[in-house]
Image 1: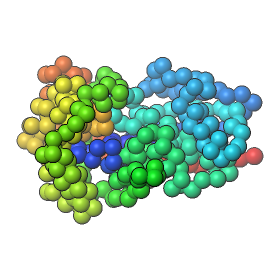
Image 2 (image 1 turned 180 degrees about the vertical axis):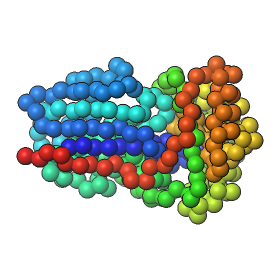
Image 3 (image 1 turned 120 degrees about the horizontal axis):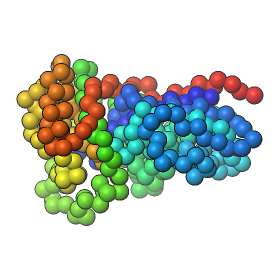
Image 4 (image 1 turned 90 degrees about the vertical axis):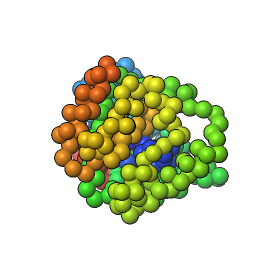
Length: 301
C-alpha cells in the first residue's frame, strides 16, 4: 500500500498545542508484509533514522496492532519524505499518522478515522500536528478531562498564502519547550485566551483583518526568539513587504509569514534578513493541504 501524509504547522501564534494546519510537503510510505522487517529510506531528510524495529513508524504500527489485540506482522517499509527533521513541520507527526493509517488498513480497519486521530494524539501527546496531517486543512482540538480529544476541522480562509523559511539547523522540540516558563501572569493568560479565540473565529469566518491581530502571541514566541536568530526582525518588519503576520512554526526553527498578495518581495526580504543574522534557509511559498492523509492499496493478497 501507498500512504501519503502532509506536513503540518502548529500553534499559528497563540493556538499553543491546539491549532494545526496541513502543508503541501509530504512523507510517503510504501508498506507490504514480508518474512522479516526491513526499512528502505529514500532521499534526504532522514539522517540517523533507525532502520530496525526501533523506527517510530514500526513502533506506531506495533502500537495499533496491540490496541487491536493482534500480532504485529513482519513488514517491508519504504519511506520517502520532503519534511526535514526537527524543523517545526511535524515530521514525527507524519510518521505516527502514516504508520497508524497503514497499520489500520493492514489489520482490516479495526479503527475508524476518528479513533485513529485519538490514537495519534495519544502517541504524540498533543493533537495539533497529527490532526492537521490526518484530516488536512486546519484543525482545532483539545484534550478532555477524561483523556480523549475533541476536534473541529476548519477550511483555510480564501486567498491565504503561506511563505515558509526553513533554516538549515535543527531545533529539538524538547529544547524549545525547556525555555518556556512554568507560570504566566494573569495579563498574559487573558491575552492568550482572547487571541486564541479570535484566531479560531477569524479562520472560521475567513476574516483576514482579524487574523492579523489574532496571530499575536505571548505564550511561547517571546521565549523562543533567542533560539531563532532573525525571527524578531522578521516579525517586526514583514508587514512592510506584504505579510500581515509572522509566526514560529511549531517549536521552530521554521518561520511562517502569512500574506495574500505577490510573494516576491516578501521572499527576498526574509532571505536577506536571515542571512544578515547568519542563518541559511530555504524560503518558498507553500500551499495548504486540504486532503489530509491518503492511502491506496497497490497489492493485496
